[in-house]
Image 1: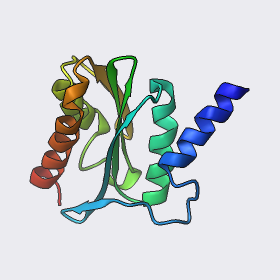
Image 2 (image 1 turned 120 degrees about the vertical axis):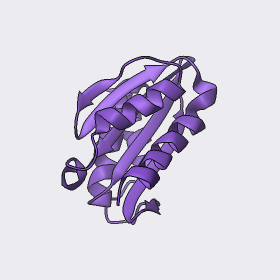
Image 3 (image 1 turned 30 degrees about the vertical axis):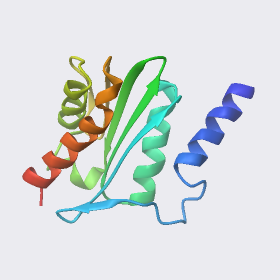
Length: 137
């Protein structure tokens, strides 16, 4: 029960705890984007955080990297209206490559992966931003 409560507290912290509050995001080519790197967040909690942020954005892309136990895990979510333009799987693979991992997968709207090089977390998020900037309108 305590672990569930802690996970819920972390989720509220990252999502501002209230879906009616405008979530800080960037606009890249008219597409809302949230990219964050978090420490001490277990990988299993990242998907629910990405889901919450996607619903707050309404339309956009969310990428969260969690650094936990010396490893980096990345989850990317793409809202349904954008999956015809880009797949979360393609974006997560960019992040996984930057983190020194291999593979990564999931569905067009939600994908995950990981890698050992946590020092490259900001580069992983930047590579996703650059992809959006170059390939989407």
